[in-house]
Length: 271
Image 1 (cartoon, one colour):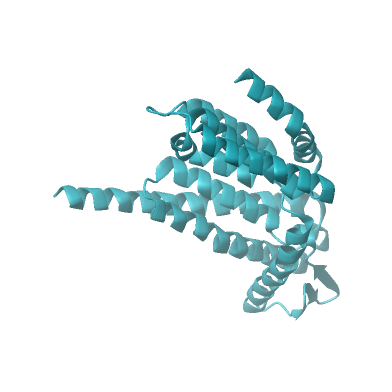
Image 2: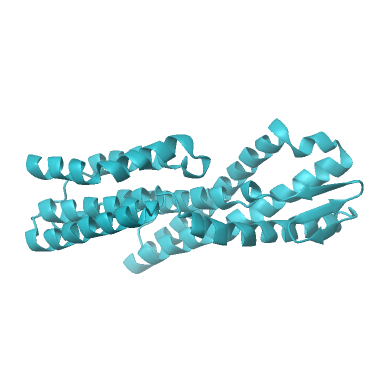
């Protein structure tokens, strides 16, 4: 066990160090500061499942795959794959020491740990612009509904005398990533059936997109009717936090409804 831990640190120190660095310095990866420690805490709380037994061969296969992936990613200088090899190695070690039953028992912390890995720049670029356009369309439609003169051109919302530019930082990708992680966390704690958990996690996607569109609408509304300065700085940042709180409340309410539905199904089965 000690030898395996030392070998793990030697082989995967680089991806671990770069991951911790990005958690601390990169705003797009900051959610890892919460998800990483939370994953370890859940592993400790859930302990070792009864009847867990080592599966040495399967564990070695996964570990060898993780090592090969680590060195291939190192040669290609691809950070996401490098960090994915770290996660795969943790799974391999778990199988090697306690077997696949322990991996299934730790599905929640392992999933949260996977979600803590920052997305590749290519994926961020591919997702950000469509999300910017979607937020711009929702925001512009709501502004027009409130009789605000508005013209939409891509991710630029033209208002009388000024324009709102929905930047990559306002795409909602951060809130989408955070809400997906929250959906996984809430579903793992409150819900019991896998398909019900899937409903909650999938629902986090339209909730995040809609709430980000509402945020764009509120920004445009305040800029047009109150003060153009409200579209930037502290007030703009505060809107983002407030709208994320609303999104979390919606997700929690949906989880409560799904949990109540599970309870109703259980009672019907007993009768």
